[in-house]
Picture (cartoon, rainbow, N blue to C red):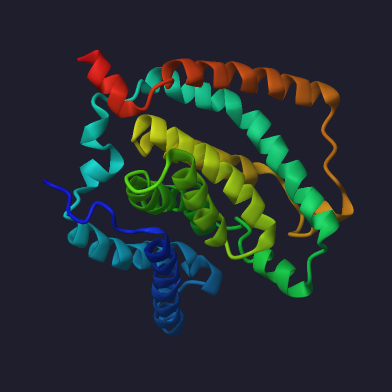
Length: 272
C-alpha cells in the first residue's frame, strides 16, 4: 500500500487538524449528551466514547486521504526490522520514575507561580480518573489515539519536511496545545519531545504508546484529593528518591542511546 500525500500535514495544516479534531469531539459530545439518558451514562463517563468517535471521524478521512494502512501507521516499513522491544521497553521503564517525579514537581511549580482559577479547577477536576471509563480513557485510549495522531501522522509528515529537531519540537508543541491548558501544556511539550525522539529513532508507535500509557497510569495512581492539591502541598521528594530515580533514568537512557544511536531506517539498512 503506497502512501500518498506524504507531506500532509505541514505545520499549519497540523494546527488545523488539531482544531478539526476538537470540533469533531465537540459535535460528537453534543450529540451524545442529548442521548445520555438512553445510554444510562453520566456526562463525564461519555469522555471515552467521545474521544474514540472524534478520533474515528478524523482518522477515517486521514487514512483514506493518505492511502495509509494502520499497520504502516504503527510501524513504518521504511524503518526496516521491528524495534528491539524486549530491550527497549525495560529501558523505557527505567526512565519512568525520573520522568514522573520531574513532571509532578514541574506541575506543582506552575501551580505555585500561576494559581488556578475556579474554572481551571473545574476543568482539571473533570479529568479526574474516578470511574472505570475515565481510567480506560486516560490510561489506554488516550495514549493510543494521541500517539497515532501526534507521532504517527503529524511527526511522521514533519520528519519528511523539516529538520529533525524542528519537526520534533513542532509536533511536541502541538501536543501540548491539544491539552488546552497551561498547567498541562509545559509537561506535555517536554514529554512530547521525548516521545518524538523515540519515534524518530524507531519509526514505531509501540514504544511511544507504552511509555505514554505507563506515564498516564502512574499519574492516575497518585491519589490527589483534588485538582488543586499541589497548590497547598508542594510535593517534596526525598533526596534518596531523586538519587534513585536519576540513577535508574541514567541507566535507561544509556541503554536507549546504545540501541537507538542511528535512526530506524539506517539501522535497518545496516542490519541487511
